[in-house]
Image (tube, rainbow, N blue to C red):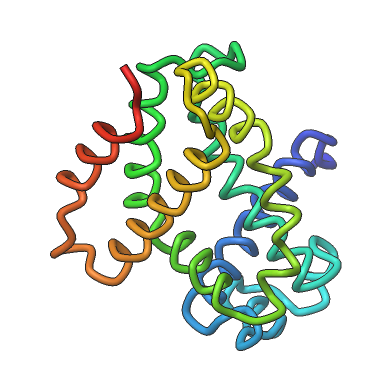
Length: 193
């Protein structure tokens, strides 16, 4: 058997990191960040605890990886033409995409919302999350400025809070929550003509 190429080794490494991150995401969302040990994550991922440390230096680094990956996966879906400017159509699409992403990534959102409620844990990732959404925030602020809003930051903060609130309600009652109706109202109220 010939030795693996650098590309093969890197692909194996990325697959293993993803497996570990998926295991941690599941356990963090089920047991909380503090309630999940490295040993639990290693067991769920089917590897030894020592091997896990070859991929992530700490539980905190693993949480960072999960959160940054989740947020950037969502953010890259906005601004379809990648021009740094969100049009009205892209704003509508952004809201649609946010809802779709929330429904397709329920485990990530359960973790996100649980982190908001874990004293000391959210503070660990707060700066990191704001850095991840900074380009998105700028595009939304620019959008509201172009629309003549007297308070673009207020509009952005309210939209973000509403999307978070909708996400929380949806996570608790996914089958009963009228997500389609709520999405329509949000578009009507937050996407200027």
